[in-house]
Image (cartoon, rainbow, N blue to C red; front, side):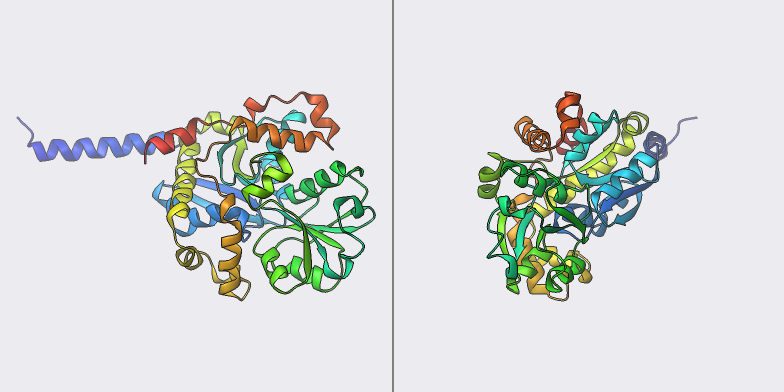
Length: 337
Protein backbone atom coordinates (compact mmCIF):
# COMPACT_ATOMS: atom_id res chain seq x y z
CA UNK A 1 0.00 0.00 0.00
CA UNK A 2 1.47 3.34 -1.05
CA UNK A 3 1.26 6.23 1.39
CA UNK A 4 0.17 9.58 -0.13
CA UNK A 5 3.00 12.06 -0.66
CA UNK A 6 1.41 14.53 1.78
CA UNK A 7 1.43 11.87 4.50
CA UNK A 8 5.10 11.17 3.90
CA UNK A 9 5.88 14.89 4.12
CA UNK A 10 4.05 15.21 7.44
CA UNK A 11 5.87 12.17 8.83
CA UNK A 12 9.19 13.58 7.69
CA UNK A 13 8.41 16.88 9.41
CA UNK A 14 7.43 15.13 12.66
CA UNK A 15 10.60 13.04 12.53
CA UNK A 16 12.73 16.14 11.97
CA UNK A 17 11.06 17.95 14.87
CA UNK A 18 11.58 14.97 17.15
CA UNK A 19 15.21 14.74 16.15
CA UNK A 20 15.64 18.46 16.81
CA UNK A 21 13.99 18.19 20.21
CA UNK A 22 16.15 15.22 21.12
CA UNK A 23 19.28 17.13 20.22
CA UNK A 24 18.44 19.86 22.73
CA UNK A 25 19.87 18.66 26.05
CA UNK A 26 18.27 21.34 28.27
CA UNK A 27 15.16 23.44 27.77
CA UNK A 28 15.23 25.24 31.13
CA UNK A 29 18.35 27.35 31.62
CA UNK A 30 19.26 29.62 34.55
CA UNK A 31 21.38 32.64 33.64
CA UNK A 32 23.20 34.91 36.08
CA UNK A 33 24.02 38.57 35.45
CA UNK A 34 25.20 41.42 37.65
CA UNK A 35 23.20 44.58 36.91
CA UNK A 36 20.91 43.59 34.03
CA UNK A 37 19.58 47.13 33.55
CA UNK A 38 23.05 48.39 32.62
CA UNK A 39 23.63 49.18 28.95
CA UNK A 40 26.65 46.87 29.31
CA UNK A 41 24.13 43.99 29.21
CA UNK A 42 21.68 45.45 26.69
CA UNK A 43 22.04 42.53 24.21
CA UNK A 44 20.87 40.15 26.96
CA UNK A 45 17.77 42.23 27.68
CA UNK A 46 17.01 42.39 23.95
CA UNK A 47 17.35 38.62 23.51
CA UNK A 48 14.88 38.19 26.36
CA UNK A 49 12.40 40.93 25.42
CA UNK A 50 12.37 40.23 21.67
CA UNK A 51 11.64 36.56 22.28
CA UNK A 52 14.87 35.19 20.81
CA UNK A 53 15.42 32.69 23.62
CA UNK A 54 11.90 31.32 23.16
CA UNK A 55 12.51 31.07 19.40
CA UNK A 56 15.39 28.76 20.25
CA UNK A 57 13.18 26.56 22.43
CA UNK A 58 14.72 27.85 25.67
CA UNK A 59 13.06 28.84 28.92
CA UNK A 60 15.66 31.20 30.38
CA UNK A 61 15.34 32.31 34.01
CA UNK A 62 17.52 35.35 34.68
CA UNK A 63 18.93 35.91 38.17
CA UNK A 64 20.06 39.52 38.51
CA UNK A 65 22.82 40.05 41.09
CA UNK A 66 24.36 43.27 42.41
CA UNK A 67 27.59 42.69 40.47
CA UNK A 68 29.48 40.31 38.22
CA UNK A 69 31.42 38.72 41.08
CA UNK A 70 28.21 37.22 42.49
CA UNK A 71 27.07 35.81 39.16
CA UNK A 72 30.49 34.20 38.74
CA UNK A 73 30.23 32.66 42.21
CA UNK A 74 26.78 31.31 41.33
CA UNK A 75 28.18 29.63 38.22
CA UNK A 76 31.02 28.03 40.18
CA UNK A 77 28.58 26.96 42.88
CA UNK A 78 26.18 25.47 40.34
CA UNK A 79 23.09 27.62 41.01
CA UNK A 80 23.21 29.09 37.47
CA UNK A 81 24.07 27.39 34.17
CA UNK A 82 25.42 30.35 32.27
CA UNK A 83 26.53 33.93 32.95
CA UNK A 84 26.41 37.21 31.10
CA UNK A 85 29.50 38.84 32.58
CA UNK A 86 32.91 40.34 32.02
CA UNK A 87 35.42 38.46 29.86
CA UNK A 88 38.14 39.03 32.49
CA UNK A 89 36.52 36.41 34.71
CA UNK A 90 37.44 33.65 32.24
CA UNK A 91 41.11 34.63 32.61
CA UNK A 92 41.05 34.92 36.39
CA UNK A 93 39.22 31.63 36.83
CA UNK A 94 41.66 29.76 34.59
CA UNK A 95 44.40 31.09 36.86
CA UNK A 96 42.50 29.52 39.77
CA UNK A 97 42.18 26.16 38.00
CA UNK A 98 38.53 26.62 36.97
CA UNK A 99 37.81 25.92 33.28
CA UNK A 100 35.32 28.58 32.22
CA UNK A 101 34.99 29.81 28.64
CA UNK A 102 33.27 32.63 26.80
CA UNK A 103 31.22 31.64 23.75
CA UNK A 104 30.16 35.04 22.35
CA UNK A 105 31.37 38.60 22.81
CA UNK A 106 28.63 41.15 23.51
CA UNK A 107 30.84 44.19 24.10
CA UNK A 108 34.11 45.03 22.37
CA UNK A 109 34.79 47.95 24.74
CA UNK A 110 34.26 47.89 28.52
CA UNK A 111 31.96 50.93 28.49
CA UNK A 112 33.16 51.71 32.03
CA UNK A 113 33.70 55.30 33.13
CA UNK A 114 35.78 56.43 36.10
CA UNK A 115 34.66 59.80 37.42
CA UNK A 116 35.17 61.98 40.47
CA UNK A 117 32.40 63.58 42.53
CA UNK A 118 32.33 67.25 41.57
CA UNK A 119 33.13 68.44 45.09
CA UNK A 120 36.32 66.32 45.12
CA UNK A 121 37.49 67.17 41.59
CA UNK A 122 39.88 69.85 42.87
CA UNK A 123 41.82 67.26 44.90
CA UNK A 124 41.44 64.18 42.66
CA UNK A 125 42.57 65.16 39.18
CA UNK A 126 44.12 61.89 37.96
CA UNK A 127 44.25 58.18 38.92
CA UNK A 128 47.42 58.94 40.91
CA UNK A 129 45.28 61.04 43.28
CA UNK A 130 42.92 58.17 44.13
CA UNK A 131 45.06 56.99 47.05
CA UNK A 132 42.88 56.79 50.14
CA UNK A 133 39.70 57.55 48.18
CA UNK A 134 36.35 55.81 48.59
CA UNK A 135 35.50 54.52 45.11
CA UNK A 136 32.05 53.19 44.25
CA UNK A 137 32.03 50.05 42.09
CA UNK A 138 29.15 47.78 41.12
CA UNK A 139 30.61 45.15 43.46
CA UNK A 140 34.12 44.32 44.72
CA UNK A 141 35.72 41.80 42.37
CA UNK A 142 33.64 42.97 39.39
CA UNK A 143 34.88 44.46 36.13
CA UNK A 144 34.28 48.01 37.38
CA UNK A 145 36.62 47.20 40.27
CA UNK A 146 39.31 45.75 37.97
CA UNK A 147 39.11 48.74 35.65
CA UNK A 148 39.84 51.38 38.27
CA UNK A 149 42.56 49.23 39.86
CA UNK A 150 44.23 49.03 36.45
CA UNK A 151 44.24 52.83 36.19
CA UNK A 152 45.62 53.19 39.71
CA UNK A 153 48.49 50.74 39.18
CA UNK A 154 49.37 52.36 35.84
CA UNK A 155 49.61 55.64 37.74
CA UNK A 156 52.04 54.16 40.28
CA UNK A 157 49.64 53.22 43.08
CA UNK A 158 48.98 49.82 44.60
CA UNK A 159 45.70 48.06 43.77
CA UNK A 160 44.58 48.29 47.40
CA UNK A 161 45.48 51.97 47.90
CA UNK A 162 41.78 52.89 47.80
CA UNK A 163 38.58 51.57 49.39
CA UNK A 164 36.14 49.93 46.99
CA UNK A 165 32.52 50.37 47.99
CA UNK A 166 29.65 48.30 46.60
CA UNK A 167 27.11 50.72 45.09
CA UNK A 168 25.46 48.47 42.51
CA UNK A 169 24.11 50.06 39.34
CA UNK A 170 21.39 52.47 38.33
CA UNK A 171 19.62 54.48 41.02
CA UNK A 172 21.84 53.20 43.85
CA UNK A 173 25.09 54.55 42.41
CA UNK A 174 23.42 57.87 41.58
CA UNK A 175 22.25 58.15 45.20
CA UNK A 176 25.73 57.31 46.53
CA UNK A 177 27.27 60.19 44.56
CA UNK A 178 24.52 62.69 45.37
CA UNK A 179 24.70 61.92 49.10
CA UNK A 180 28.49 62.28 49.11
CA UNK A 181 29.07 58.71 50.30
CA UNK A 182 31.90 58.12 47.79
CA UNK A 183 34.69 60.26 46.35
CA UNK A 184 34.80 58.66 42.93
CA UNK A 185 32.93 56.08 40.90
CA UNK A 186 33.71 53.34 38.39
CA UNK A 187 30.41 52.50 36.73
CA UNK A 188 28.40 52.34 33.51
CA UNK A 189 25.47 53.83 31.64
CA UNK A 190 22.75 54.88 32.07
CA UNK A 191 23.86 56.02 35.56
CA UNK A 192 26.99 57.77 34.25
CA UNK A 193 25.06 59.84 31.71
CA UNK A 194 22.54 60.82 34.41
CA UNK A 195 25.34 61.99 36.70
CA UNK A 196 26.95 63.86 33.80
CA UNK A 197 23.71 65.63 32.88
CA UNK A 198 23.15 66.64 36.51
CA UNK A 199 26.69 68.02 36.78
CA UNK A 200 27.55 65.71 39.69
CA UNK A 201 30.79 64.23 38.33
CA UNK A 202 33.97 65.05 36.42
CA UNK A 203 35.07 62.24 34.09
CA UNK A 204 38.61 60.92 34.47
CA UNK A 205 38.62 57.90 32.09
CA UNK A 206 36.02 56.82 29.53
CA UNK A 207 36.06 53.41 27.79
CA UNK A 208 32.77 53.82 25.91
CA UNK A 209 34.39 54.92 22.66
CA UNK A 210 37.05 53.62 20.28
CA UNK A 211 39.16 56.71 20.95
CA UNK A 212 38.98 56.14 24.69
CA UNK A 213 39.99 52.50 24.34
CA UNK A 214 42.93 53.35 22.10
CA UNK A 215 44.15 55.77 24.76
CA UNK A 216 43.65 53.29 27.61
CA UNK A 217 44.55 49.94 26.02
CA UNK A 218 45.87 50.58 22.53
CA UNK A 219 42.81 48.85 21.02
CA UNK A 220 39.68 46.97 21.96
CA UNK A 221 39.28 45.25 25.30
CA UNK A 222 36.42 42.70 25.38
CA UNK A 223 33.76 43.45 27.92
CA UNK A 224 30.47 41.60 28.39
CA UNK A 225 30.42 38.01 27.12
CA UNK A 226 28.37 34.89 27.65
CA UNK A 227 30.49 32.40 29.58
CA UNK A 228 29.89 28.87 30.88
CA UNK A 229 31.75 26.04 32.58
CA UNK A 230 33.53 23.96 29.96
CA UNK A 231 31.93 20.76 31.26
CA UNK A 232 28.48 22.31 30.64
CA UNK A 233 29.48 23.15 27.06
CA UNK A 234 30.71 19.60 26.47
CA UNK A 235 27.56 18.00 27.91
CA UNK A 236 25.14 20.49 26.33
CA UNK A 237 26.53 21.60 22.95
CA UNK A 238 23.10 22.09 21.34
CA UNK A 239 21.80 24.09 24.30
CA UNK A 240 24.95 26.22 24.20
CA UNK A 241 24.45 26.77 20.48
CA UNK A 242 20.88 27.93 21.01
CA UNK A 243 21.94 30.41 23.70
CA UNK A 244 24.54 31.82 21.32
CA UNK A 245 22.05 31.92 18.43
CA UNK A 246 19.70 34.07 20.51
CA UNK A 247 22.45 36.43 21.64
CA UNK A 248 23.91 36.77 18.15
CA UNK A 249 20.48 37.64 16.75
CA UNK A 250 20.13 40.31 19.45
CA UNK A 251 23.50 41.83 18.46
CA UNK A 252 22.46 41.94 14.81
CA UNK A 253 19.10 43.52 15.71
CA UNK A 254 20.86 46.14 17.84
CA UNK A 255 23.26 46.95 15.03
CA UNK A 256 20.38 48.12 12.79
CA UNK A 257 17.81 49.33 15.33
CA UNK A 258 17.02 53.00 15.84
CA UNK A 259 17.46 54.50 19.32
CA UNK A 260 13.66 54.78 19.58
CA UNK A 261 13.25 51.07 18.80
CA UNK A 262 15.79 50.15 21.48
CA UNK A 263 14.16 52.38 24.09
CA UNK A 264 10.77 50.81 23.36
CA UNK A 265 12.23 47.29 23.67
CA UNK A 266 13.59 47.63 27.21
CA UNK A 267 11.54 47.85 30.44
CA UNK A 268 10.50 51.39 31.40
CA UNK A 269 12.24 51.19 34.76
CA UNK A 270 15.57 50.99 32.90
CA UNK A 271 15.03 54.62 31.84
CA UNK A 272 15.56 55.87 35.44
CA UNK A 273 12.41 57.94 35.04
CA UNK A 274 13.71 59.81 32.00
CA UNK A 275 13.27 58.39 28.50
CA UNK A 276 15.46 61.11 26.98
CA UNK A 277 18.24 60.29 29.45
CA UNK A 278 18.19 56.64 28.46
CA UNK A 279 18.35 57.55 24.78
CA UNK A 280 21.34 59.83 25.42
CA UNK A 281 23.07 57.09 27.42
CA UNK A 282 22.43 54.62 24.62
CA UNK A 283 24.02 56.94 22.08
CA UNK A 284 27.06 57.44 24.32
CA UNK A 285 27.51 53.69 24.82
CA UNK A 286 26.53 52.39 21.38
CA UNK A 287 30.08 52.10 19.97
CA UNK A 288 30.95 49.47 22.58
CA UNK A 289 28.76 46.65 21.24
CA UNK A 290 30.41 43.81 19.35
CA UNK A 291 29.91 43.67 15.59
CA UNK A 292 30.91 40.02 15.12
CA UNK A 293 30.50 38.32 18.48
CA UNK A 294 34.11 37.14 18.19
CA UNK A 295 36.92 38.26 20.51
CA UNK A 296 40.06 39.02 18.47
CA UNK A 297 43.41 37.79 19.84
CA UNK A 298 44.56 41.37 20.44
CA UNK A 299 41.49 41.97 22.59
CA UNK A 300 42.24 38.89 24.69
CA UNK A 301 45.82 40.07 25.13
CA UNK A 302 44.71 43.56 26.18
CA UNK A 303 42.38 42.07 28.81
CA UNK A 304 45.16 39.82 30.10
CA UNK A 305 47.66 42.68 30.31
CA UNK A 306 45.17 44.78 32.23
CA UNK A 307 44.72 42.03 34.85
CA UNK A 308 48.40 41.09 34.93
CA UNK A 309 49.28 44.61 35.97
CA UNK A 310 47.73 44.12 39.42
CA UNK A 311 46.83 40.41 39.76
CA UNK A 312 49.95 38.34 40.53
CA UNK A 313 47.93 35.11 40.49
CA UNK A 314 47.15 35.67 36.80
CA UNK A 315 50.82 36.24 35.92
CA UNK A 316 52.05 33.22 37.88
CA UNK A 317 49.45 30.91 36.28
CA UNK A 318 50.68 31.45 32.70
CA UNK A 319 47.14 31.62 31.31
CA UNK A 320 46.42 30.08 27.89
CA UNK A 321 44.20 32.73 26.31
CA UNK A 322 43.10 30.34 23.55
CA UNK A 323 41.22 28.41 26.22
CA UNK A 324 39.22 31.43 27.40
CA UNK A 325 37.06 31.76 24.28
CA UNK A 326 35.36 29.09 22.15
CA UNK A 327 34.39 30.65 18.81
CA UNK A 328 32.70 27.59 17.26
CA UNK A 329 29.20 28.54 18.35
CA UNK A 330 29.18 32.16 17.24
CA UNK A 331 30.64 31.20 13.85
CA UNK A 332 27.85 28.69 13.40
CA UNK A 333 25.26 31.25 14.48
CA UNK A 334 26.61 33.76 11.93
CA UNK A 335 26.55 31.14 9.17
CA UNK A 336 22.92 30.36 9.94
CA UNK A 337 21.63 33.91 9.57
